[in-house]
Amino acid sequence: MSDTFNLGGKQFRSRLIIGTGKYRTFNEMKVAHRASCAEMVTVAVNRVPLDRKTESFLDHLDAAMQILPNTAGCYDADHAIRTARLAREALETDWIKLEVIGDQVTLLPDNEQTLEAAKILVKEGFIVLPYFSDDLIMAKKLLDVGCPAVMPLAAPIGSGMGVQNPSNLRIMREQLPDATIIVDAGVGVPSDASLAMELGADAILMNTAIAESRDPEQMATAMKLAVEAGRLAYLAGRMPKRLYASASSPIQGAIK
Amino acid sequence: MRIEVNGEEREVPAGLNLQTLLEHLSLPQQRVAVELDRKVIRKADWTNTFVEKGARIEIVHFVGGG
Figure 1 (cartoon, chains in turn blue, purple):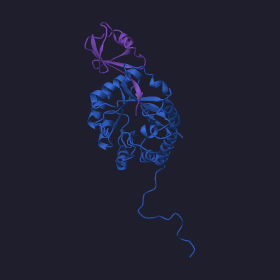
Figure 2 (figure 1 turned 120 degrees about the vertical axis):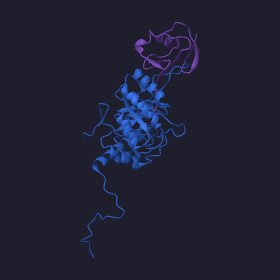
Figure 3 (figure 1 turned 30 degrees about the vertical axis):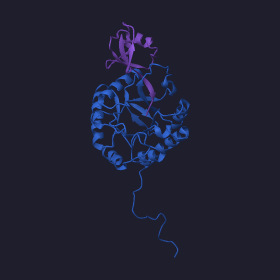
Figure 4 (figure 1 turned 135 degrees about the vertical axis):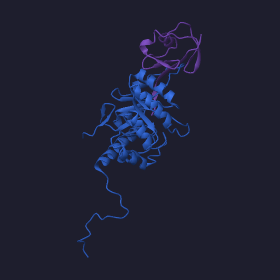
């Protein structure tokens, strides 16, 4: 099937983007990554510990994967911009998952600061993929400043609550038919991923749902299938919802 | 002289550049990035960027994340 996912001048077969956090072991992560067939993984930028040796985390990632560094842990545009610049220097990549958090309890995004950071980073040549609240107007603003995709949340990061506001996603899809929409954060189970794809998301980014499952390898496989199923269903076009029944078998000609 | 590295106060010899500072701290030099007083210093410029007293340095690498 030639249904490829195009982003930042690259073509991906997989529409599942996965994280690298919270795995119990590196091996568990590697096995899950392989099972997911994802071609892009997120990583976080963090201070190097000064008092102990650390092994290079990146060595545990498949070299063929597109690495997407994030600006997790940043609470204003300035910190996010600095983090993005550091990531670019260390990884020699222009790709950045822009995340500016507004609050420590909910980890909900600060959309205003996200937009400010996006403007500057796009000008500096970054491929900016912003995490933001599932809001159409915000999506338009982020696209207007030059983000090649927008990444609305389904639910708070790590909550596993699934798509909390399917109408917002539907509206975003309908009003922005040409935009690349990646649902980022909040997926808990494969049906959540499927639903987001059925609603027209172009891809899904998830971490905790796989990493915190009892068997990440199995869950990664399940998520892969769910994303594919949801995508196929979206392309196929769903039947209309009706309040009342509509018989599948002919009513005329049944014996009396 | 005293400088700040990754939020920690450190006593280091005077006259270090960024490359020799990383060596002094026994830190890896591959796939890390260095910020001096809030400005990223490209790896090519490490040897000609000297660390002054009171400098604030951030040295980052990559860890698991979502």
